[in-house]
Image 1 (tube, rainbow, N blue to C red):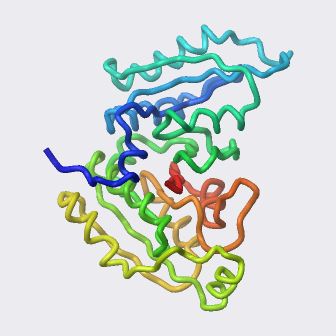
Image 2 (tube, rainbow, N blue to C red):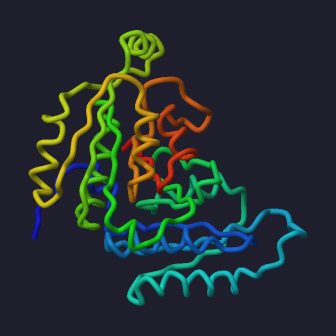
Length: 273
């Protein structure tokens, strides 16, 4: 059995009690989102939690019952694996507040790409757009964007695990911003906690996951353009929650907030833990 890294990062990201959480409401189910979440849970031996978010005030435009939607969602998930452990919950409240509350027991929260709500930084979350042909997607690599900061480690943890579980290549993109941007980051207090050479940063992970083929891409400048391009031929893109640059209201870095809107593949934004 392969040894696990004895770090809080790995323990918190992939707790044995953690779940892949999908929230649904009275609108038509997104089969692609539930299927992706179930496949991820199955690959990583996690359980799945399907939460029906009931608004505090009734919406006359939605008439679907929680029971019917739960049954439909369970059927979709079990079509991925009949052995998948599934829990269902009915919770009333505001969507973003519920997502934040669920992070305490979640390994990953999965939402549609067009839902821009972001959970609190205690948990990683995934944005899933319209799927590609599954057979073609299976052969595509996992792409991870790094900036040499401490936040990159949580992204690497997820990316290596997924590349190994999916038996596919890992493409590591390392971007260095211009000096002017670095100076602004230091002045605003958003400078990286540490900066490490890419080869050194990858060495420990490569030892832990010797079966994962790694391709490195290094360049100077913002990473948004190249990550968006690579996402067109990736099965998954993983980025840190915070990157260099300005921050939006959800506490996301410019790279992560742009990728969850523009990436052409599912995106996981790694937690800060």
